Each structure stands twice: as C-alpha cells, then as structure tokens.
Image 1: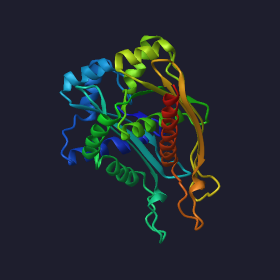
Image 2: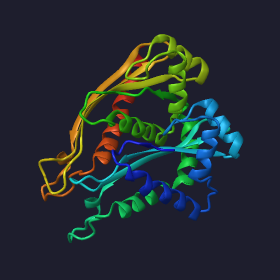
Image 3: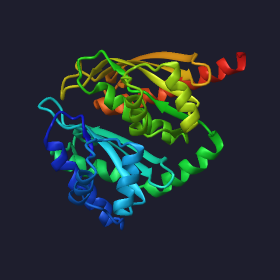
Image 4: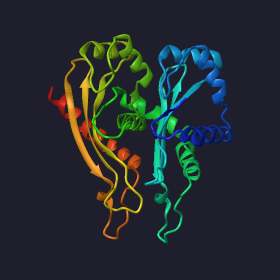
Length: 314
C-alpha cells in the first residue's frame, strides 16, 4: 500500500488501479492490491509507503516477487488548483536495495499551450499523464542507476525531517522527493522502512535528528557513510489564476558523517514559483511538487560541494 499525503481519500481510487493497469499493459506481471493485502494481513504488516527488512522478506517469500513497488500519493487537486503528484520506488527483494525511484508532479495548467489551450481540468486525466511520465523509462533508468552507483560508491540514509510548516505532510513529501533525487544521482539509499525499523528497535523517534549510537549501527549494519536530515519551515501550494499566491518552500538540510558524528555540511533554501516567471509572464512554477523537486536538486548540489570541501580540509 502507498502512503497518502495528498489529503484526499480519492487519491487511492484515482491512482492505484491506473498504476496497476499501466504496468500490466507494459508487460509486467503484477501481484494486484487485493492479493498483496492478503499477504500483508497474514503477516500482520500494517505499514504504508515503506517496509521493514524482515517484512520485505516475508512478502517476497509468499509471493515470489522480484521487486516491491513502494510509494506515496503526494498531491491531489484542491478547489484552488488542479495539482497532482506521486512518488514511487522499486525495492529489489534479493539485494534489499532501492534500484529505482521517481517523483512526478504537475498542475493542469502546466499543459496549456502558447495559444491558451490544453489545460487539464480532470484529476483522472492528469493522473494518467503523470503515471506515463513516471514509468515510461523505468528499465532504462534502472540501468543508468546501476552504472552510476558503481562510480559514486556512496551510501546514504535519510532521517525524516522536522516539520515546522503549516502543511501536515510537508516533511513526508520532501522525504520521498529527496530519495528520488539521490537515486537519480546513483547514490545507494537505505529503504526508509529499514531505517524506521532500526530507530524503533532502539526506542528512538525518527524525526530530524540521530544519536551517535544509531550512526554507528547504520555504518556497521548497512554500510551507510552519510545521513541527511533537516527541517521544513514553509511548504505552501499555489492557487489557480492568482499570480501573487505562487507555491513557496523553505527548508534546511545537513549531512552527518556516520564514522565521526560530525555535521560536515549544512544549507538552507527559500524559493517561490513566481521567481521563475519571465518578462512575458511565462515560466512561473505553479506546482509545489515541481518547485520542491527543483530545490531538492539544488540542495543536494550545495551539500555535495560543502561535503567535498570538508573532506578536503580534514
């Protein structure tokens, strides 16, 4: 089951059948939601959006699945704006590694042409477009990740962020989009469910911080070199046809070295969609999901530069 951060119960009915149908049409053998729920019920697995290591093995043993598809429904249109988006990742049941991840988001207005046509008003139609965009190059992107991973040889864990914003699921959406960005760069990222399992076993909350004992365990058990965590301060969606109410985001991140416990890089970013508008009133980012992904990419770039500088000096 996916986690639902969209705030709408309709998200499951709109997305899950479409995702299953699309993958089946592409020739993948799918264990459908109903059969998967039966296996989860048998093993008393209640998690959504992530899975623990032992639970992943139990599902794999019962279903013979080569991969588990995990994810979250991040956005679904409100009365202010038809924005939609979701995040997905594939967990290899043999290696227990995330081998592919993707986050997509858009508003219906993103498809308007220069002639003012093409606005997508239906959440169903927008979801169909996003599903195709997410999965169409999956096999190629898995191969690219494998190649990049052999070059980078970096292993990260992401600890869930603190949320100081007024948006209930801001930290969760930033979290899954951070995973997608890191995977796209060929970085080996620990499955969130494995991380949460480790925190629970040590009676520690997994929010915005980590102690030295857990850093040592992440390094010794999973080979994690760096931990990323941080906080979200502003996570505000835009509104349709309102220039002044563009999406806004403000968040901070830090890199923690697992071998020393030192914070080796930290950075803060603040941005809004209107900033990207051109002289001709074009180009403004209306999707909070797209604005988030753009800034997460910037954030990783900044942290990487500071990480390299820190190691060069130490």
